[in-house]
Amino acid sequence: MVTPLLVLVSALLAPGVSSPAGAPTAPKEVFHVRSFESGSRLAAPRLHTARLHTELLESRPEESASLASRDVGEILLRFSTPVQLHLSRIRVVDDQGRELATGPLAHPEGDEHRLFVTLATPLPPGGYTVEWRAGAPDNHIISDTYTFRVEADTVSLLPGTPPEAIPPDAPVSAPRLLPSGTGIRWLHLLGLI
Image (cartoon, rainbow, N blue to C red; front, top):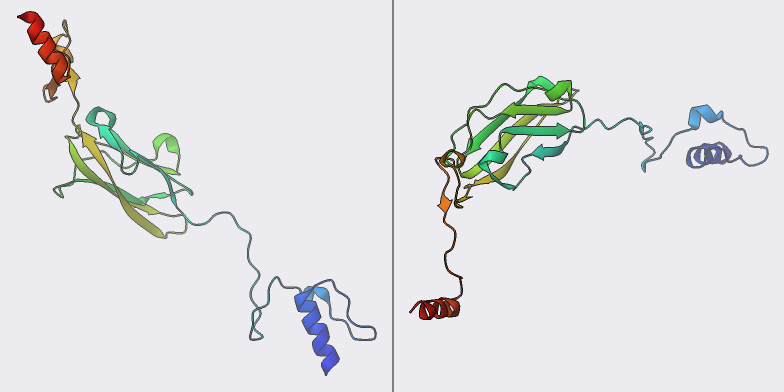
């Protein structure tokens, strides 16, 4: 009884190792497994398959980005696997919890690894949350959120700037007429006197 047990254990733990002389040998294809779990239960061999889990690889705008409103006109997400459009969604919510209007969800240029929506209007300054959901090839739904900020655009008025080049809602910063240091200001005033 001990010899057949040794043959079985040696075949399981070290495939290809010959059994002791005179002991019966078992066919290698029957006992060839990749791993052995404790408790005499055989583990199924691991399958070497392509990456099956869908993960977010890239977002535009990026997470925690701080951008000017003119730089945010769309939301683009890129995934590790193709995603199903009918199971997916992208929502953009401002810091008051209001959902912003977006265009239809699409695969840009037919690339099923990416999801894309355009924003209906320029974003005013503030914080925004992108809530997304994506349907993996196996119909598994994954979802997450990330945030970004839109900062106020500033425009410097230079002599000769045409009025149509200044956005109506942009804060305007005037150019400095005097140097910024206090001591230099006093010298400048003293020189004027």
